[in-house]
Image (cartoon, rainbow, N blue to C red; front, side, top):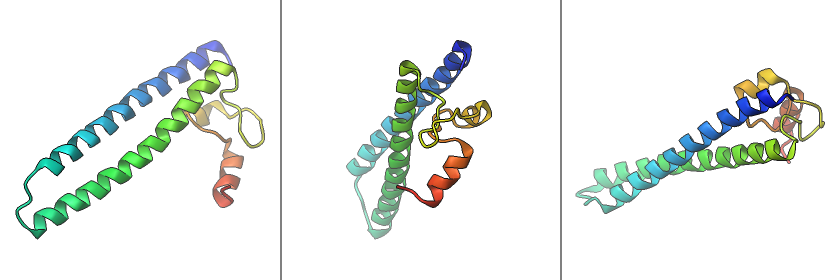
Length: 117
C-alpha cells in the first residue's frame, strides 16, 4: 500500500478514534448526572434505568470499535495494515474505505461471521 493511502486511512482512523472517545466521555458524564438526579417515582426510576442500559450498551460497542481502531493504527506503524488476519492477503481498498479498521477481507469476514472463534 502506498504511503498516501496509509496516511489517508490513518487520518480516518484517528478522526473516528477522537469521536468515539468524545462519545464515551459524554455518555459517562451524562450517566453521572442522571445518577445524581433525584428520582421521584417508579416511572422516573424505570426511565433512568432504561437510559442507563441503552447508554451502557452503546459504550460497550464503541469501546470495542475503539480497540479495533487502535489495533489498525498499530498495524499502520508496523507495516501490516490492510492485510487480512485470516488469509494474509491484502484487503481491498474499497473495503477499507468503508471500514478502515477491517481485520478481514470480504471472503474471510463471511467465514468469521459464520464461525466466530
